[in-house]
Length: 164
Image 1: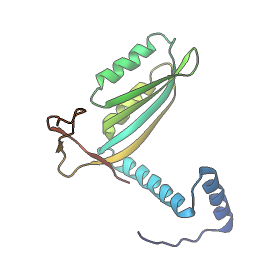
Image 2: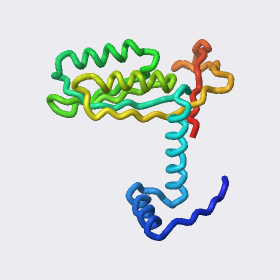
Image 3: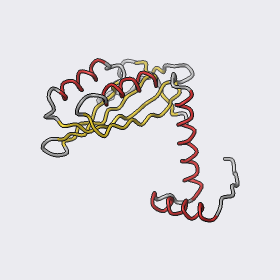
């Protein structure tokens, strides 16, 4: 681990310490590491949108809005290669919160997310993107023990490693 020293004015340090306390960090170093990771991630995604990512798309919608639930489901089915899973929660008698886990190229994930959030009736949409590296050999073959102690057939899958 590298050790660096920074100097900041007293007012900024006090404000930073308040942020650290509110967010529950144990020390300044942990908070600075998260800030640096966040900034590097934003820069990476802004300048290299063609890479791969994993993402969480969250939004609220009124399920009484005409055909909206069906349109949202159809969009997810149309992009089944990007959509890993969807969590659906009922907030009240009218509103639902959905969180969709996505993976794919950053461009495809952003295009899909923009199309979904642009649907009439979708509110409070937010996309959280994390750039990933695809394993050097791209695929890994594993055998996993079956529930009854027997090996399952070997299968191949891709490992995605967050870049920061």
